[in-house]
Image 1: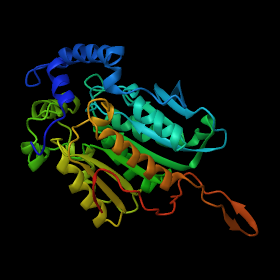
Image 2: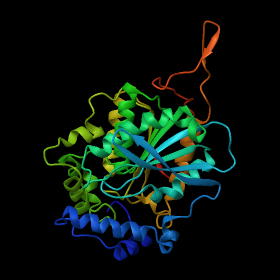
Image 3: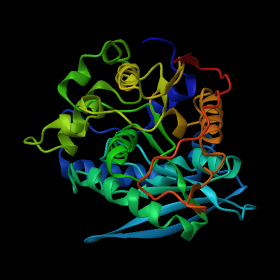
Image 4: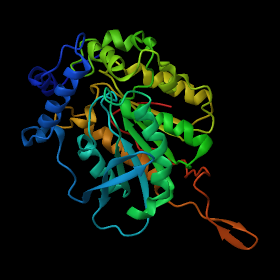
Length: 355
């Protein structure tokens, strides 16, 4: 290991039931996932998963897309009425598990303190809906949510994407697509991201050096693509790391966990973005495990990381872009036009910074 795993994470890993990742079938995994969802919703885990910020209101909504209806979890500050920035979030879970409510601690805080409207998409999961279904949900949902921003009192011209783990896969892929097709994005925030779905993901030094991590174990990392991705599918197609054109992609904040088998993917992708001329801030939290922002009561680094994300959102989304005058009149930018805020410096944090 590259460091010492926090004690509470070690205890939690002993208590958490896990399947035999090497042999679990899709049917067995679906049963395991249902049990995990029930456990995560237990009040007994609230000290570990964190309490939502009371200054934010959580409501449910739905999004109609061709042929399906997806659930949304909407976070909004209690005492804000003016048009607010819109943050579109994707939860983690390897595209095979997870629900938006696992991020309540983080997203309520961002909504209340940015302030912003945060909409978390409950995209479809494998193995019932294998790749590329979750990716297609993200691709179609983001421009539609931008069109509907006013429904929640949000500003369609101040949008950021946020994702954790495999949710960061969706955020990064959608940011790449948005650079060409819209909507314009101010920022993307990738938290302990999974950016390489190919076999090369198991060759990064962090995969071996953090092999004893109790979260995102090597066996789980190998099982996830087996359960989520059809054998005939080219995994490079869902790997942001292999995108041929990253020019014009929204500025990125990448939050890396030092005890994560996936850690080295963050630095590698940051380098690719920089080579494409994209502004990148890479923050590394040495004593953080994978998915640490979903377990703030167990990983002390979650607090400083959340503050870093909040500062980044404020710097990127804080002000509306003035309308451009045209023939003596003002004209608002369309949804496909990129919008960029002032490149304000991000305040320092407990993380190790690389730019």
